[in-house]
Image 1: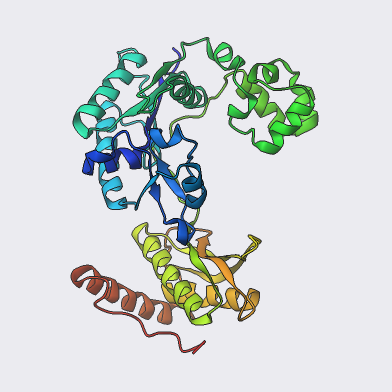
Image 2: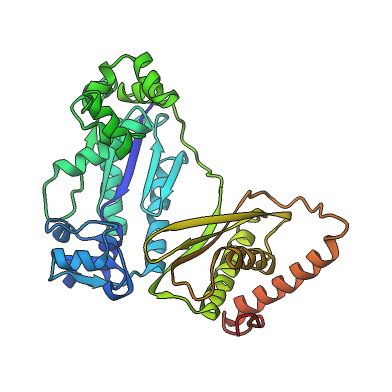
Length: 392
């Protein structure tokens, strides 16, 4: 029996939620994102704005030049999270085999359901619209690769200034034929560089790629060449991952104006370290590596990292190491465009601290727990740690 996989995608999700709270936005060109004078980017844009050339991830200043009548709406992420939870609960009533890719996207394995996958897709679309008042598009196929591409094709085929509400079904056995005429760039694993190299070989469509000898692709692209050949034939045996392992946690900010003041940089680094530590605790993880990310005004970007002697979830230890990395890689007075703190090498607590680190770590943990409890009960402003004295 072939599998029945559905790819689910909420159409222009942030914009759709904003329209629920402000119906006057419907049919208007607007974008959700940051202010153009603060280097904001487009997080999402309405289909009316897309028809005028606005795209997600576009700098907001450029979007305004593209569409001078564009309305800019600040994001309301609490509302987006709440709506996402409502929608994902609907999907879990269809099947527990759900792989949530993001706040507005998921795969469903409905192989064990007796209904045809296309019928289930229509039922999902109708329920999400009726119960959450949100539009969505779905792709149906025998695997994740083709289902995702089916969603993209279905959306693109609905030339409209409003939500596509598309459903694209690829019957079993028709995967290669469905993919054949599509641009090679639509295939997972084909980025701009690979697409350019494929074009040099005369490979422009997924069908061209499927017909090319696998051994020759492997000679040009290594193992990725063999993988591309299999994907071009519509082959994908990946299963639905109902739980996704957290690989890293990070926080970063692009400043509205380049920052060269050490106090502001140190304060931002401290706040980011605290937010990273808070997420580590929420996910019951310890970090073995701390890294920072720096971007200069000319967009040159560097990352530097260092490994902890003992994994931690303590904000103070993360901040200390991040501060050291910053001091080693930033010259005082040099302007900074972006600053970020991240952790990786994540693992669950083993409670096997070294003899020398255990007392101090336990004291720090108790102090952090007490601070977190006070902030949870009385708000984040109730208590703060002392400010760093360095840089004054």
